[in-house]
Every structure is written in structure tokens, then in C-alpha cells.
Amino acid sequence: MSILEVNDLSVKFRVRDGEVAAVNKVSFALEKGEILGVVGESGSGKSQLVLSMLGLLASNGEASGSVKFDGQELIGMKPAALNEIRGDRVSMIFQDPMTCLNGYLTIAKQMTEVLMLHKGMDYQTALARSTEMLDAVKIPDAKNRVKRYPHEFSGGMRQRVMIAMSLLCKPDLLIADEPTTALDVTVQAQIIELLNDLKEDLGMSIIMITHDLGVIAGISDNVLVMYASRAVEYAPVHGLFESPNHPYTKALLRSIPRLDKAGQEDLYAIPGNPPNLLHLPQGCAFAERCDHQKEKCLEDRPLLRSVSDGRQKACHLDVLP
Ligand SMILES: Nc1ncnc2c1ncn2[C@@H]1O[C@H](COP(=O)(O)OP(=O)(O)OP(=O)(O)O)[C@@H](O)[C@H]1O
Ligand SMILES: [Mg+2]
Image 1 (cartoon, helix red, strand yellow):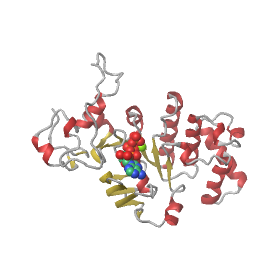
Image 2 (cartoon, helix red, strand yellow):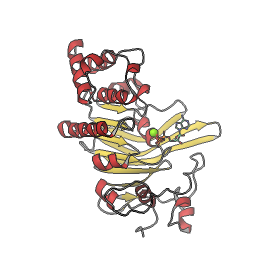
Image 3 (tube, protein in one colour):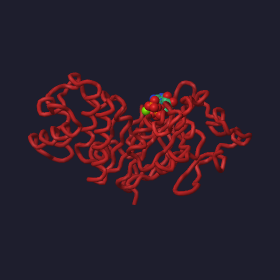
């Protein structure tokens, strides 16, 4: 059985001018020990997709559809029940570390509390385990630093503290929203290695949201590509990089530097802008920016459909030229 089954998950935000369709009928499954990479332009709905799963939407937001974690429905679950799962079996690394760290409490206090609450540890055992975890994310002098306050850490260190916190309870599912953006490349590589080890050792499943396609290539088993609130492509990572099936994915890949391709043409920038989520077009949301646009693309919205080798795409074209 999949550890996570997401079906037709949608998120809407009520705003003065109407409704923002932040996530539209996204479906996917995640297996135990699988790492799913989620990519897509800024504003495409990546964060709201995962926040909605854990009941963490802003007050003007509403989720619909189904998210089953280990068979349990999360959408509509009572906050108290969600609280029990969050931070224990499922944990999340937020895009902004200060949303989850409390500035008034020492790191030791914040980390040990989680272990005492969810795992019933005494303070000393919890402190030893917290220090061990800070060591694992390469916080120098963790034994002393653990007694400090969040503002005494640099941005990159805070991000690492948050990664350490999220791993404390050895969750079955880790959701990481841009976990390595504030880190320099060597630390980033160490964190990725740590996550990979945890996946191997604990069979932990991970959803990894990132702008960094290098990180995606290095860590994911499968990749979900989002565009304007919808999933437009889903594929095993190698297939996606070798032969993207959706014009948006192809454009995205062309817009990153490749060290393995000599004599590469200039870096590509996708022309135009993504559509307004208050007024999504009737047809394909990418059509306006697509090199392969046909009349049909403006009229009918292509649904995500299975193609070959476990791959899916939302595009009318059968093969990309
Ligand atoms: N509380 C809110 N009210 C109205 N609209 C919102 C609210 N929160 C998010 N949105 C909108 O939902 C859409 C998706 O946002 P989301 O945070 O998921 O983007 P993202 O893909 O994570 O982008 P980024 O890569 O910049 O983090 C955006 O258009 C955003 O403006
Ligand atoms: Mg985001």
C-alpha cells in the first residue's frame, strides 16, 4: 500500500475579487521509501499543495479532495488528531524557518519538547538525541549551540536546525519545502546525503519541493511538475530529464545550465508569464507560452493522462517535436 494517496486535491482561497484556484485536482501516490520531487514556477501551488495536506492553510483557504496517509483521511480531520500525526509520523520543513522556530525559546527547549511529547522521553535522553541530530546536520559545536536562541544562528544554520527538528521523531513521511535554498552547496550536498541515508535506513518517504533541478536530479525517484495550480507532468526522474513529455517541462529544463552538455546554446528564458489564478484560461494554462500551441489547446484543457513507462502528462500533443 502507498504511504500517501492524494486524489483530486484542490485548494481555493477566498479573496476580495473572487477565488484564487491555488491547487487544482492534483492526484499522485507516494510509496514507502520513495522520494518525490515537486517542481514548478513560483506561485504554481507547490507550497499550498503540501500545506493543505497537513491542515495548515491560511484562514481564507479551503481544501477539497482526498489525502490518505497510511489509510487515514487527512482532509477534514479534526485539528487535535492532525496534531498527533504532525511532528511525529509526518513532519514538515517549512520554506521560512522562522515560521516554525519560536524566537523566545532555546533550541534545546524546542527540540526536547517534541521528543518528550511524542516519544515520552525524559529531558536528558531528549537533549542527547537533539544534540545528536544537530550534529548530523553539521551544526558545529552542537553540544553548546543547542542551548542558544534562534536569533543567535545564521539563516543557513536555522534552516539546518529546522531540518534536525523535523527528523527528530524519525517520521514516516517528511515534507520538505525548499529545504536547502539558504545553504551553500557543500552543506546542501551533506543534507541531501543525510536525507538519502534516512530514506535508506528508515524507509522514510519524502516529498521534496525545490526550484533547484540539480537537487531534484540528485535525490528524487519520481518528479511531479506543477504549472499554474495543476500537475502537468509526472515521471520517473531519469525519464523526465532525458525526454520531458510536456512542453513546460522541456522549457524548464532548457532554462538551467548543463555541465554535461558541451557547446550549449545560451540559457533559455520561458517567454511570457503564468496566468492569473483568479481567472484560469479555458484551455491549457501553458498554451500562451507554448512553442507547440494548436487551436485545440486554447479551447480544451488537456487532462493529466497516462502515457508510457509509468509517466503521465497533461498535453494534447502525443509526442513532443
Ligand atoms: N492566503 C492566501 N490568499 C490568497 N492567495 C493565496 C494565499 N496563499 C497563497 N495564495 C496564492 O496561491 C498560489 C500558490 O501559492 P504557493 O505558495 O503554493 O506557490 P509556490 O509554488 O509554493 O511558489 P514559490 O515557489 O514562490 O514558493 C499563489 O498564486 C499565491 O499567491
Ligand atoms: Mg512555496
